[in-house]
Amino acid sequence: MSVLPAGTLASTVLDSYNARVKNLQCDMAELRARQLRTTAACGAAMFLLVALLILGIHGSVALPIAATIALMGPFWAVRESLGTRKKSVELAKRLSFYEGGIARMEDSWRGNGSTGLDYARDNHLYQAGLGILGEGSLFELLSTTRSSVGAERLAAFLLDPPLITEATARQEAVKELRNAIALREEIALLGKYQFQNCEGSHLREWLDLPMLKVHPIVSVFLFFSSAISLILGFCGFATILTWMQIAPLLIPLLVAQAGISLAFMGRVRLHLKMLSVLGSDVLILRQGVGLMERQDCRCSKLRNLVDRARNKHAGATIHKLERLVRSIERRGDLILGGFSLWLAGGTQLVLAVERWRAAHQREFEEWLDAWAEFEALNAVAGYAFEHPDHAFPELCDGGARFEAEGLCHPLLSRNGGVGNDVALNDSTAFYVVSGSNMAGKSTFLRAMGLNAILAGTGAPVRAVNVRMSAFNVCASIAIADSLLEGKSKFLAEVERLRESISATEEDRPVLFLIDEILSGTNSRDRKVAAEAVICALVEGGALGALSTHDLALTEIAENPKLRGMNLHMQSENPEQPLDFDYRLKQGILRQTNALAIVKMMGIAIK
Image 1 (cartoon, rainbow, N blue to C red):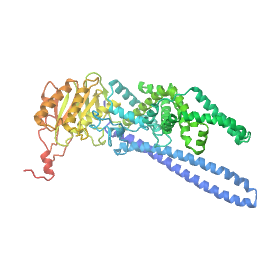
Image 2 (image 1 turned 30 degrees about the vertical axis):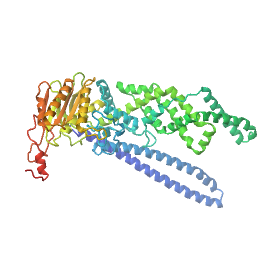
Image 3 (image 1 turned 180 degrees about the vertical axis):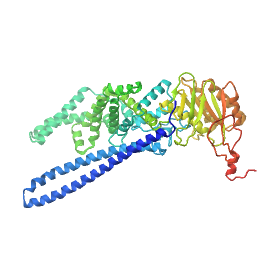
Image 4 (image 1 turned 60 degrees about the horizontal axis):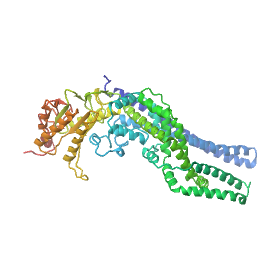
């Protein structure tokens, strides 16, 4: 698979983003000018109105004109103000979408996006070692989702290794969505305001509430009693009937309504509290599902997601729920709150929502799941669009395989990475990478792991040519002591290695990445234990790499039964110990740089 030189197509994408931002800024400037013209016109209208009213004192001809302006001017001004405000919010969302893209293209995205730490998992096999979550993480780079449910699914893409069938299906979907920049722009517009979100936790908490079940006659009675109460109240205020005539009918109805409301008050309040915060969640979900319904997709995964929404009229059905939730929110208004108390509106709305939930809960959960998947795939597709010089891997079934040309760390700057070739397969099961301090060994291990994770999400990887399996990645990198759990670094690392060996018993191939294996013990014990670990991993069909400063561990790769290979990284200039080219070289490291670095720091060595 051949690609254009790095940066050629990426610059085209960046140019398109900058052009779109320039157009949007022009639209924003025109909108501000329109607002100024509206303000000026209102001022002129008020001045003319005052002048006409003064003239009206002396002549009646000007009075009708003044009255017309007095009536039409404010309505026109309010309408124009609301229209420009709505348009301004929309333009701000579009600008934010493209400015975020420019930041990612220019490598200034770190610390500006979501870290994903809310989705962190304890004792995960590679989450911490590879920098999947957190500031400057792979999640922050990929996370362009509009809603939390989409971000949560994206985190699951990164943290749950898929089977090859799922990884292949995701890749097909990402390829189809890659150039759908207009669709991703529309997703960014969801919701009334930018701060609104679709929180999966809120929706699931509501769905998990015990169903409020009442006899159907209760709902029927409340509906008719509130209707009759409203008619009687109208008759009283309109003096069609006297209040003395109305009271014998109205009071029993109000007492009955109050009794029913009191009987369910505790459970109704719980539901009202939950539903009162769901407005924006349901709004964004309804808009998102509606947008998804309108897509014409070719690949089976996307078509399945769209059909799950389209076949059950998801958008229209969720819209009914949205209207009920909005009505519950409006109960806090002064006037509507009084009507709600009079007509038992809270109880009736909760019962209406419960009827909706009884009819559509299972479908609603499916729609929520479909939208989360669709949005996560679009986020990955956005990454693919912004990295056109990256290659989609050929995902291989059968035996474990990791073969790549020019593999590079995906979180390094676009112009700052150095690619290395990898060839792990039936012939070579693992690398032992020896090297100087800061030569790039840990970065190389992370490059392997992060690109394997990217492949599992359906994304392209930062390489020229790739063939790999859908791996379960196990990383023993940057493991630290845990004072709270009473574990030393050595014990924590041993537990991670045991979990990695256990992972080879599952249905997917394992990619192990071990930085400075068992460094907390003496060289002899370390070599024996490390060889036992590698032997267990290789016998389980795993592939991988380990880095070390301890040259005794390079003997592990010389065991022909294990099918290992020794590689190293170092500076070629003894006088410049930090002048690294970050290239993998055949064989074992024959020189070190620790003493040279100490001397560079001005410390005398005897």
